[in-house]
Length: 292
Image (cartoon, rainbow, N blue to C red; front, side):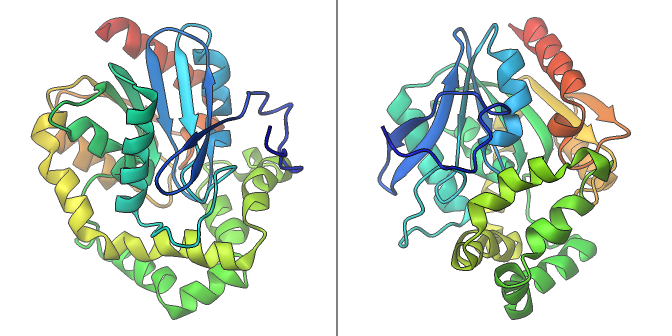
């Protein structure tokens, strides 16, 4: 047994820790329940803890698998890993292959979109259904607001702010909640405690900030796979008060996937599954019952 991280709140996250050896290093994950598999793919700067409410509820009838990306949560943080979306996508693909997952429901949030959606675009895809929670799947350089923000956080000043001012947890995460009161100090600590080391914040978190514009080719490849994604049942659950991905991002999804089922949560922000978990669980269950 690996030593448990002392900061993990096992009352809020009571799931058994498992580890899978990958080419990049050891990936931590939870695997709860039985039945049709649901793969829950997180973004930044979080880990599988963000899906705790969904895992607890959905695992009553489904097999819920929630990995931590390499360098995040309880996964290994190897020095030689690239920490770009494309590197994370490759590691996640290897993880799915190692576990032999098939006919799965893919749930993606934030960077989990460009990291997880390539699974659905494989020639022999293991993905049967997709749930999108406030994410994206296209290059961001046609959005002037995003370009300005990405240039700020992705540059030298941004790197300093990530490493030394801890801007991700002090400012960025709280600003993205629809109701900041729902981001308690206990919840925030479950995310920030994984990155108390400033070098890790620079290596892992700032790399993804740089990748907002730097990984354009990867995002373009996901966008070009949209015809494949249109062949699958898709549910989009959107927190309307998201300060990162504003309503025109949802409109872009609706343009790209006109057959998708769309549920908007007017009071939620960037993390609808943390802010309104009961509603998100209800909508996912309804979706799965309709398409199975």
